[in-house]
Length: 208
Image 1 (tube, helix red, strand yellow):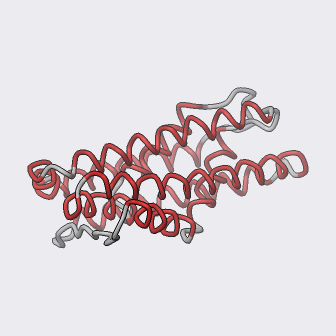
Image 2 (cartoon, rainbow, N blue to C red):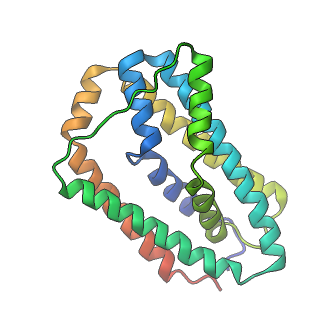
């Protein structure tokens, strides 16, 4: 296992997971198109809060496991690689299909309610903590200090908020949304290749 935090691996895999079309990103885009930027950004705030919650939980749990069981790294490595390959499969299936991208607007009477719905949306997604746990197990060494682990949570959280906010701002413009829909198959193909590459690299990585 490397003695240094692999920020490149962590941020790269986290970016793919956040930027690829999933329930959260499609809900943000749909809300931006239907209700405008303020509601979409409030939804982003809620989703980001949920993401931070899972990220911190994964980091704290991983820290405890690292101190007690070194073999946990190997298990989480295979789980993480499998999850990345699964995401690649889903993107490839969407790219090969003929179904049109469906945006789901989260209807809410106020930004406060939009925030609450975004928070609930992400807290009820247990796959998030599995992803963070697998990701941190490979990118964060067993010798990492609490401050170093906190730095990883911070940079991943900031990146996620930035990507989600960009979705909210861009999809509030009808032309951007139309272009995205037309190019969905190409985006999905790119994500499939990226997820597949990341999964294979994770499987073949030398951790010791």
